[in-house]
Length: 190
Image 1 (tube, rainbow, N blue to C red):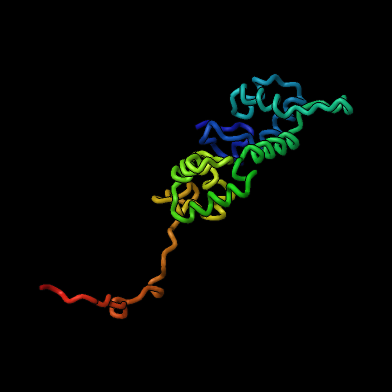
Image 2 (tube, one colour):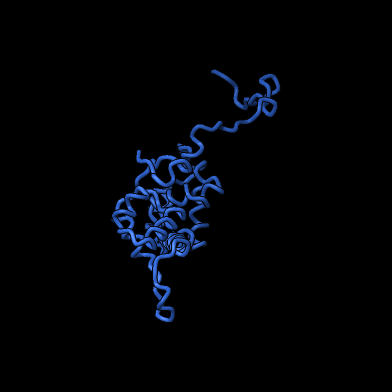
């Protein structure tokens, strides 16, 4: 795991090399660009690969011909732009009718694989692959609806792996002596 030099005391170590840049990193890129540091040095400062920093600057460079003196990279604006770009790319967020259909089927016990294949079989104009459904299930929106619970083996989300599972309290259970016994309608034996 790599240590982030300028965030060492605040955020700790990075565990996933493919994490998205956060607002703090984008603002740091802006500050270092304004200080005229080369991109390779900026990348070393924030603990990212230089291609990540180049791509970030290229994608989120502000340029407006009516305001020629304000061209540049702005961390806050870049973060907003990246957030809206991610939201636009999410099919189940963009198409509520498709989302409702998928969520209903998940709640009825369908797996993401079954849903994706059924949409193909039905010849639906709007389709979604199983990976997109899984992404939605574990997204902020899907977690709020607790969709992971409806999966057959419902693997617990990363943030909930070490927490306790809520179960029915002992007082809510029916004691064995008070349980109904099934009534036999046919005579036994022969």
